[in-house]
Amino acid sequence: MNIKDYLEQNRLAVDRFLDEVSPSATTPPTTLHESMRYSLMAGGKRVRPILTIAAAEAVGSTHPAGLMAVACSLEFIHTYSLIHDDLPSMDNDDFRRGKPTNHKVYGDAMAILAGDALLTMAFDLISRADLMKGCEPSRQVRIIQELAYGSGNMGMVGGQVFDIQAENKDIDLPTLQNIHKHKTGMLIRAAVRMGAIAAGATDRQLDDMTGYAENIGLAFQIADDVLNVTGTREELGKNPNTDAERGKKTYPTFYGVEGASKLADDCVTRAIGRLGTFGPQADPLREIARYITSRKN
Picture 1: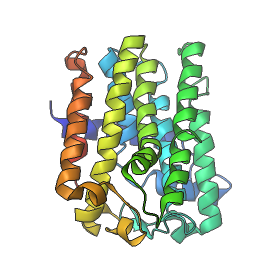
Picture 2: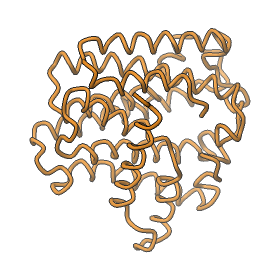
Picture 3: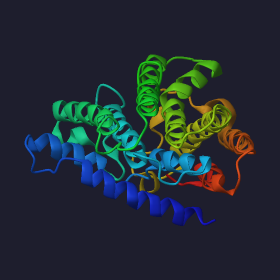
């Protein structure tokens, strides 16, 4: 299969849905909605929602009830996390996806509120009767719980706390692994599991999907760490070498660039191995795993 065509087709579908369900910039309070859309529609790769769609396909259901709302709820969460990560009190970044960061355009207070609104809208999406029509209530509750767990104190937010506490400290490798298991890995894990649950995965299928997701989550973070060292601002859409400037230890710190790249490739191999019981319908997941370590941004 042509993974670039698959990613582009689904990225466009996700973008259309995000545009449809997001308040227009002319809806009061206009500045809030303009700020939300500024970051939400800034042209991300949409990896997380596409993983949700691909997981549902792997289970054998291309259009389970509410799938696009489920998938796009993850992009709302991801976007809010980026807005907050870029704030002066966090990573203090000036650029994101080749544009000035949200707080540089709208100010710190509005950026915080835009992130808060995106977070709550994510749960609005997957609780709306019109968007989730036909989804079994018990399945819908499981999906909501997966998103809450993956994005909250035991997931992404907890990982951000671990990350902040580790800055300028001589942390060991297990501490680094714990940071990224939560900060990056848990939302990717949620994305895959939510798609599988939406499609009615069996317990065995969900277990294999979870193993796949945990491995690609680690591969994704390692690849990001390597790109922060090797990438250019034009490729990344933001300044490179920011991890070293903030005193953050990363996988290249422990393994070097080549060693870290090999570790990421090993994660991809393990991830694909977890899909052995799935047929060709899981090929998009297999190709996404390979794409994760070959991308340039």
